[in-house]
Length: 150
Length: 185
Image 1 (cartoon, chains in turn yellow, cyan):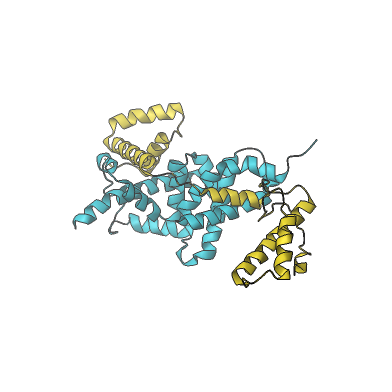
Image 2 (cartoon, chains in turn cyan, purple; image 1 turned 30 degrees about the vertical axis):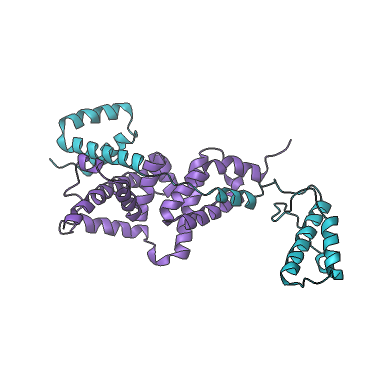
């Protein structure tokens, strides 16, 4: 006995808990007496069970949450407490950057003046907190002093 | 009296549903990288519009934005693959024609056969569903939204949701079991 499309949708809705109790009971009675409805019910139950048990939940990488939090200004862990501390952090990052370049590119001869200045700067600027790479603070400090490193 | 700022509101309204957002995006985009791009873009949209969220179903609100962002993103990055919803009706009409080779209504597999499906086959079959069917099925059977919520998220009447859901499930049943027959051909 062919099942109408309306009946098919009812069976699905019934299994999805969308029917009120009166309609659900009425449909259950009909299902018990109708092979086609019963088969539809059984196969949809089987499919839903398969979907629930066999499909692995998809989970985002932890990095995604971190990026989003940073983008909306929720990452405050690395934010420095003052403008001066931020300036010092940027200076330190710039100095370390140029020092690293120097180490790779520079000569191994006796200390040039540049070497001494660089290492002195590094010692002087050891900031208490770790170096900031990305600041979530909307206010950005312009690195006006970077150009002064010899 | 301090008003909740936008970031805090975002954290309260959107972040709890990051997992669900990613899951939907993953099934719409087909891979992790694109899904994460979509979620990130959706979150920015949600953040910019956070004041427009009236207290209520935050989960549905977030997923609506994710869904819309996904389709915009796909339209931008994969224009050739995008199937417009109207075409779906044409596909359905063609498939219901008696001469159509994989006639959907003729033989839907029995429950016992469906129950024997393996994970890989189910995963592939779901990924292969047309987008409108896939999203409806994901929202219902993987994420547990009810019909009214799915209607709101996908922007169609409840009747359309019911029809798409039944068709999606029927297609899936056919795909899960059909592969088995193909292997013996």
